[in-house]
Length: 177
Image (cartoon, rainbow, N blue to C red; front, side, top):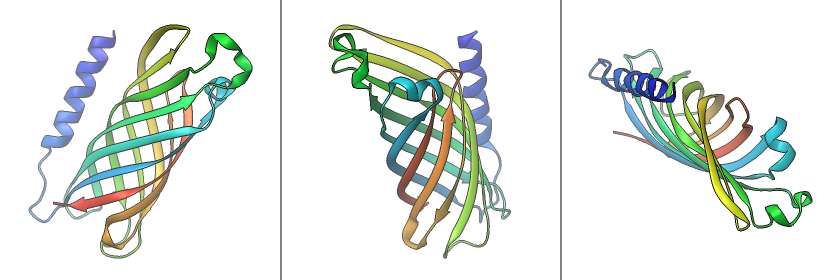
């Protein structure tokens, strides 16, 4: 099942990347980093941590709509209340997603945007006192942001899978090709 899901997501990402665009549509590369704030069951054992993202958005016409792909990686230490077994342990959600976004207004000034994505999220759990384990699942994300002059952006996002959910507050830099 996982192989079929990965094949489907890879095909979706390829179709999104290869989608025809008009000559004046922009391609944007971006990098961002910030805090991750676990929620739900994930929040029961993980502390606030950090995450980083990188990706590309390919504009589709002049509408403000874009499609692309993103990679992400994060890390959270476990809470101390779990004792010595989990001492020096950490949890690391990472993966790849196909994304779509919509930017409002015209480029060059403040530009709000919305985005969402679907893909593969891997959750790795590692520590000094046990062997590392990882689990791959279907992942999703959605969020909103604000782009500024000179390619700076800030955004909030919610990311999750069936047993890993967290909010991210990120800042970064985007540049058009």
